[in-house]
Length: 197
Image (tube, rainbow, N blue to C red; front, side, top):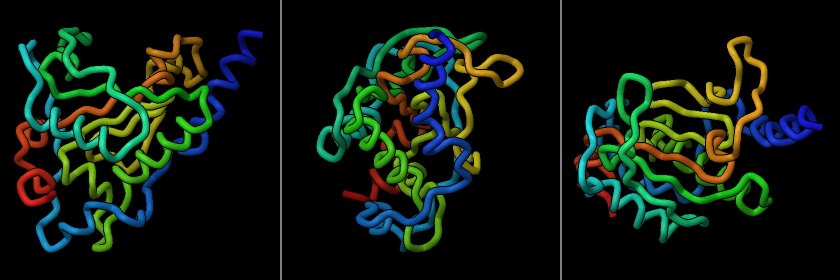
């Protein structure tokens, strides 16, 4: 029964698994910014615990409140990851409540990932994520890292041979989507925040 439960929990991943790119998305806010040079890919690790969220993370949380289904599970959490810190520790990551166990939430997570990682009308890949300064997205045992061509398996869900492991919904990011920002995005210095809406 355990193997069946794990297999069922992994099935929705296949809808987006190992995607090399997402195509254009109608109504992509990044389309309004194509006259500006696209923001470069960037990934900034966290190195300490801060006392409050960065302004870009708060702005992103507010943007999600207005433009996405789901709800915020919070930003700040001082926690270590191996030899470093979680982006939550610096106020640069948000957990957005969506559940893989609800059909509407799965649809909304797919829509949100396609919007963030879609191509704009000028052909820029991952356009809205880059414009906003998003550097990582983790959802349902799948992850996207800034600069990667597409989504990959999230390592916490798989053993060293690539076989699915039994992990709880929070570790697997099945009960929320984790979205982290680079330092420029968190400081509201990327084009979405400086020249966008």
